[in-house]
Length: 144
Image (cartoon, rainbow, N blue to C red; front, side, top):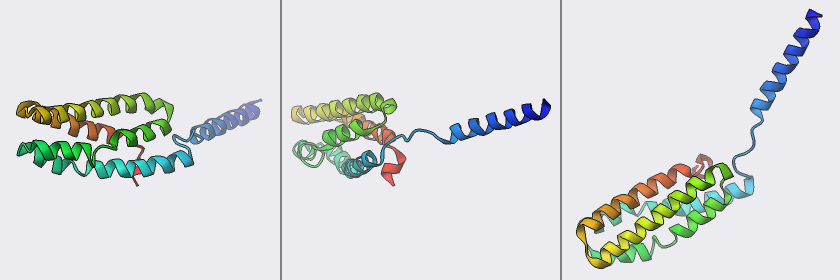
């Protein structure tokens, strides 16, 4: 009887350990490829932040707007494609951060249009924070 209980306990331990090792993939392989491609484009856009910061600091209203409407214009689409392919458990957070980032970019554009220095500075801070926050929701394997 004791031997049977030991075998049962060992069997249960093996099953428990096996289930712990088999976790559902956070992202499917084909989704991972799309995320990686869009994440690379997102990171390229993010790399333009120092240039945007310089334009904001010298209050170059025109080129600030040009950068937002030019090279940074596609960031919303990139985040949308990433969000659609994220694991459902991370999707809501990513969509919320993406909305906030797009709103911050719109506020920055409006501040530049109105030539409002203080709003421009606040809006840039929100844009930089938004890019950083969204970078955190991109799966690590997509950034490799």
